[in-house]
Image (cartoon, rainbow, N blue to C red; front, side, top):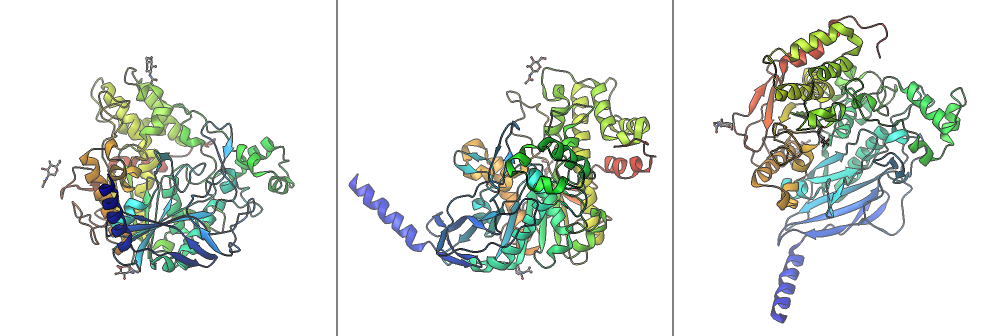
Length: 556
Ligand SMILES: *[C@@H]1O[C@H](CO)[C@@H](O)[C@H](O)[C@H]1NC(C)=O
Ligand SMILES: *[C@@H]1O[C@H](CO)[C@@H](O)[C@H](O)[C@H]1NC(C)=O
Ligand SMILES: *[C@@H]1O[C@H](CO)[C@@H](O)[C@H](O)[C@H]1NC(C)=O
């Protein structure tokens, strides 16, 4: 026993002796000290949690620089999430004082320098979310450790305001909105100014994010305010064109919130809102209600970015020149709409219930509402063109999921990828589709066995969860996770997902407007996993055929 203790002590001290660490780091606000986590005898990661990148923000104000601090800030605890509504929408939690970021810096025998940097923006529908992500068994979803270690890059995750405090807008300059996007911008600028002290290369910064975080990344590439601050960007399952990503009628939402908190909706509204407590404002967010085929839940995310004439000087479609020098990698999960569509049509996800064709038509009618009956019929004809007679339940259900995936994610993402490539000068463009079957699909599992990559399935692979919680996964998931980390970090290092420190299973061709190549990502991928023109017929339906129909007078 005693011998074992001594042996362990020796091994432990050897490990410590060789672990390189940054120690105390000077930033513009003061010095910070994180924690060094040894990974093996050679490698370690310095983790800094809860570094402020801006002061506590005023209600509906842009973020301001942090005043700084004396002494050494112990950066060893995640800061609170930005104030947000709880899952049941009956209470709120978090803090207004939430503009903090976390940093993971990998080291080998020597302290690192000049590493590529990846900045993560969480999803959560612009309503909820946190820089650390949900926590299972003390394992935070957005821990940057695996990416940092395997890819030899610095990972940064940042907090930004969400809900009413992040995105309420009066649609004019009195309450312009986009506070959460300004927070993200402030974080990017902070990283650009300070990351060299952490061993990062300020000229090699890549943004990445998923869902609302992916759309956020897209907005950060389109704004004119980030010139020179970052080089590359990755949007997973979310872009500026997603129907939930841009609020076209902020006035309606602000009046609803004003009425809820007892503010007048006339000239006095903005002053009254600004003097309302942050918790009251947070709780006054329009409720996200259960969807139905006639009112799909995704139409129900009213707090999102707006064209404010400042952060977004124009409609996103007119801002791609700002992204012309940025390398852009973006993609979709092959059943990204599953999670949402099973809410709208509950029978869809229930293995013992049949889904009537009528429900598929109602969902399609809701998505094509402004084109009236004609739009629904043309769209339905397209989606049912390969159906058998009668169609099987699997065919009907899969079609409904396809409709949700196309409308909520896939088509807008293809539009953004295409426009990026069409407007690029030095910037490259890469497109992917993740097609790994859902872990929840199968005979003794909740989902139908045909369910592919659902919304947010990509997160676990990008953040290396199959390595950190090996029992929850199989070898195929570790293969896939390794592939995604390789492509993502190679891209951050060189602008080409194929070139960098890590080997990849297939050469990912650049997306060009003529060929429109994409990479089909899954655990069994190989050199043949290249496709062209994702779901061409349906992209054509939503981007060309439907828009050419006359709009209904009372469109919404
Ligand atoms: C980024 O890092 C790579 C690898 O260290 C280096 O070759 C490159 O010059 C750096 N800068 C840019 C802007 O890519
Ligand atoms: C599925 O449908 C069956 C039969 O209608 C019902 O009893 C069951 O509760 C449903 N399951 C779920 C998970 O909703
Ligand atoms: C690539 O994978 C596909 C699908 O699993 C398989 O059919 C094909 O034979 C593989 N090709 C090569 C070159 O390994």
